[in-house]
Length: 117
Image 1 (cartoon, one colour):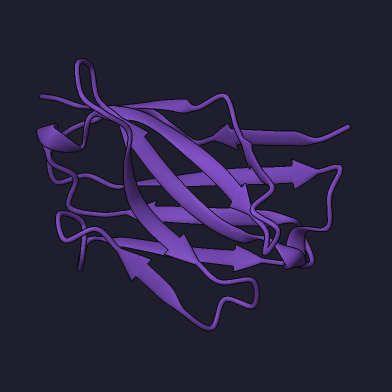
Image 2 (image 1 turned 90 degrees about the vertical axis):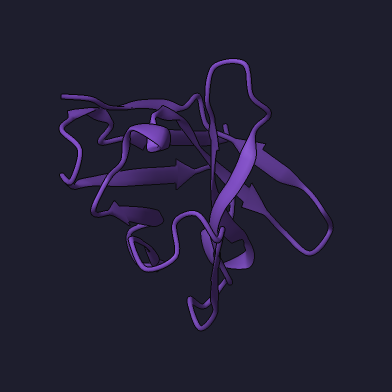
């Protein structure tokens, strides 16, 4: 049974930090590129950050470059998103996505991040 479970969201003040985690099971984690997406109310889901199967390469949306860091631990079947210098516009539901070379993909249920004073 495939499971993709995000955690770590919450309420944080502008300028603060959060670390999201995504733990997966039910498929071979190190065969999947991992990504974080987010969706704010009334907006389309957008790609935030992505990491290759080995973690050797990462990519970020322009809006989060220099503030967010994606990483993965293949031994723990976990991908992380370290979010620093958070802004109110980072408020969204954050989703974890797994994608393999056959374009099979899985989504988590999302975790809410709210940046507000």
